[in-house]
Image (spheres, rainbow, N blue to C red):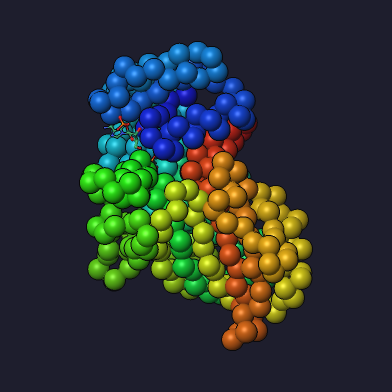
Length: 325
Ligand SMILES: NC(=O)c1ccc[n+]([C@@H]2O[C@H](COP(=O)([O-])OP(=O)(O)OC[C@H]3O[C@@H](n4cnc5c(N)ncnc54)[C@H](OP(=O)(O)O)[C@@H]3O)[C@@H](O)[C@H]2O)c1
């Protein structure tokens, strides 16, 4: 079982290595791939040393599964080349998420949609994964009519560049900028580039990916994505309107019974990014009736964007491939 990680030196790639190790993923050979500047670097995995290679050399090694985490440009250029050689590709970038011929998978929600013909599989955006992990049981039981979400996204969501800018600014060092404005002691109401409709790409990912994963294009969704000076862990304030009446206690019970979610039932106990670091669960709290709409409720959802939002979900997809095909 040869596993390639494209972007093995990046934030997500490094967490993938940890997750593969923790979950005792049955790999026999690791092929760490990164940009030319990292070629030759050594990576220790399960007490063996592996040398980072470039993507062309990695392709020649014909891995069984390739976990892509090096940005959409690399995915667009290389994912199909790997698939042509029979490699299953799980892609963390946005390159294939809206491609009708590719599945967008959160294993707990639609993992059973995968077939052995799905050679390129898209991993959803981190903000989408954590939101849908919590909304899925609600959607199944009550039906979701409308979602209004505001995100509070950590700088790790922008890769090493985001962390570097926050740390440089905190130490008053002039360095390369990931964001158009200072992030230290600031909030930036822009994640990714703006589109013609005035929304950012990150905001539209929450809309389009929710429709595709739930296979329900009737749900109305409006998102505001904000970058905050938090090193890791994304938070989301979510207002969700259901099709049916509900009892808040029933919702809490339903979430408590759902695998992969940790629910805070008490009003004054709530999840925060500081507590979710390195954890695979999605955390939800502040669950309360919307006082302006009897069919709506508010909640606060937090997760480690590098774990369930990226690396863990990707590795879970790879595990499904091994189990089923
Ligand atoms: N961060 C998150 O929370 C998150 C969540 C979900 C999805 N994602 C997605 O995951 C991907 C990686 O994100 P990240 O946060 O890990 O970024 P990152 O820390 O900036 O890492 C980027 C990785 O890509 C590699 N790379 C760059 N150019 C390459 C090339 N030409 N060939 C091969 N490898 C190349 C880099 O190698 P060098 O070290 O050699 O430069 C590095 O390993 C992005 O598509 C991002 O949208 C990120």
